Amino acid sequence: MNRRNVTKLLGHPAMILISRLLLGGIFLYAGIIKVADPHGFALAIRNYQLVPDGMVNVVALLLPWIEIVIAAGLILGVGIRGAALVSAFLLGAFALALAINLARGLDISCGCFSTAPSAGSINWLYLARDLSLLPMALHIYRFDRGMLAITGLASRGKTAMD
Amino acid sequence: MKKEKRTKKDRPSIHAASTTKRTTVGFREGLLLLLIGIAIGTGYHVVTPSGLSWFGNTNPSVSLNAEGIEEIALDDVWSLYRQKEAVFLDARDPDTFWKGHIPGALNIPPPDAEHWIDDIRAFENDGKTIISYCDGVACPLGEELALNLREKGVQSVKVLINGWSRWRAAGHPEERLDNESS
Image (cartoon, rainbow over all chains, first blue to last red; front, side, top):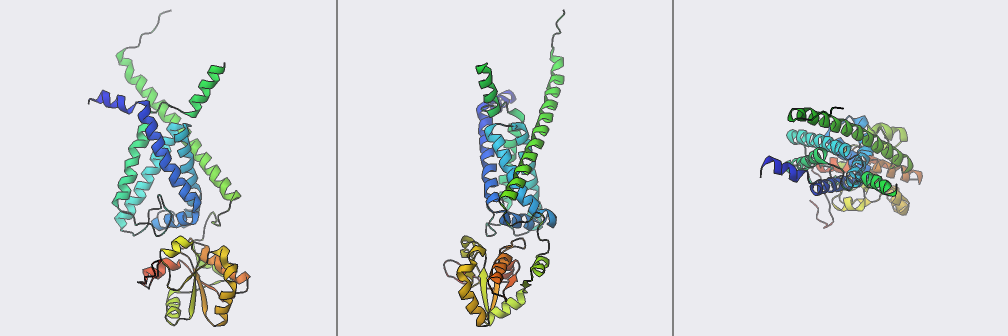
């Protein structure tokens, strides 16, 4: 398969829609879990020992909602490129945090999809899982043309009515 | 009017312009989504307070002192445990509690304090030290439980900050759902 065919395949609206729904679903789930247990998430963040103590709770209270908003953007098709860009930034930041603590050898829970302190300790598979989502975000950012985007559907509806 | 014809040479500049536009739009939308997320998160926390303060307890013992509740050291807790002179109150949720807790601890999330008040008063009258704990320095449940109990007349309750993690880290015995102590 040559480069042109790969680009054609990646640019196919259905492929982009799949990426959007998958990444959006993952961020939505992660956000809801954290909103439900801000104390547990604050503890998970504190254990990473990367955020200043005074900012731990601020991050714990706001980050899940940012995840939910970008998930909504990806799924509904509102500000898709922005949502993909923020997703990529967050995934990069999470990967960096995981990598630093894996290198430090800290025995802490991820806080990614569970806020329970008893959740499994971080390992290199968590980092691989995080990094595997990054190409999806970049794919959406590079190729998205707004298939089944709520904004596009609304403007088409308006045009039809006119 | 003469129409300008686009040649192959023009393509790179068209591509560059489209990339710049995509980046600009991406950054603008991303910033907007971030602001929306922050606004909803702030609003949600104001409407449904979780008990987590914005800037947290960087030093939990300071707020305990301000509330007049005494913190207890792990060495003292261990000594009381061995002498069977302590009653432990685990303030975490039941699921977490059953995954592991201090042997003999009662699972009392803060809202349930009033159901246990007579038993706890009886332990206090027997001269036992009442110790509440949670897990993690940021977890306020141990402190909340102690405050609830004190409001209901249990004056001697103490808090073991970050209790479960420190207890485990010290290698002390644990109790789990299958009743296996280790």
